[in-house]
Image 1: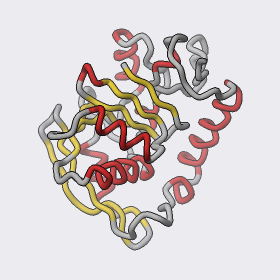
Image 2 (image 1 turned 180 degrees about the vertical axis):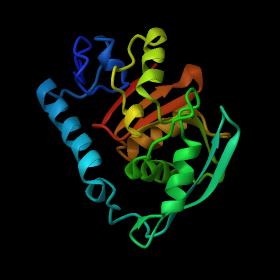
Image 3 (image 1 turned 60 degrees about the vertical axis):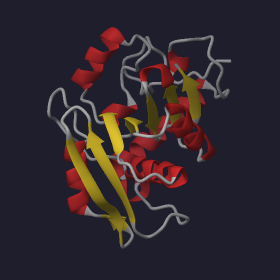
Length: 211
């Protein structure tokens, strides 16, 4: 059955990058289209208008959390604590936004804290010391449009354009291993692009796909 994430014919609806949007043969959780859109819209509203709510730290996570990144497009790296004393570390947030910027345009935007927490959770479960290798994170609408010319199933308004999605890999960990841990952690969107060597993670509704 198809997860109706968005209607490709409607430019105004918030989409996602999952293959259910472009391939009816894929199996996924059954979520009514209206309910799915309402859920994504509510999440978008929370992120846009109430960042303190959208970025609240889940109680079960440690009070201090850190990450390591390497942007494979720019060869820039960052390693540090992004969350402490119940809030995002502002200097870290700015540094992460810069590292995870749209490498096509140089534009950057605030990265969703729940996405950083998702990366922390997966990294913790993997018990990995290696940094996350970032293939793509924030994208401008212009970059997303360029991608859609090649990737026909890519959404018109991707989670990437909200700072809520990342395409990653890790030295010494296969896409299958990363995706399996993300599924156990119930990270929102989990796309296993094993043939291309990376995993897509986002903070949208829970769903999984393989390409």
